[in-house]
Image (tube, rainbow, N blue to C red; front, top):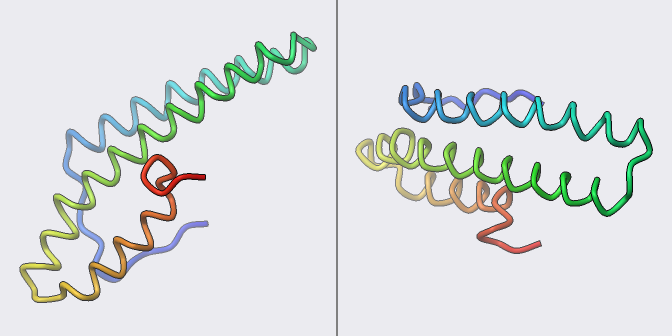
Length: 102
């Protein structure tokens, strides 16, 4: 699951904190949804909560994308690696359903 890219840059502090805060919130929310399933709560109620979790994770992806553009992409362009970074951005769009659709 973990891959290290040869041109990785440090995350901006504000983006890192935002992503971590959102992920920690998702972790707590997920524990609540797990409890709902264990308690055999009404399916539609659980589905609503799963949808909310998906939306929260999508927000994390947007924060990460913004960080990527502001750090890695900018650095790659400065180094003259525009073609490489365009290919990489196209790949990252695969992980952004709000942009690419289901």
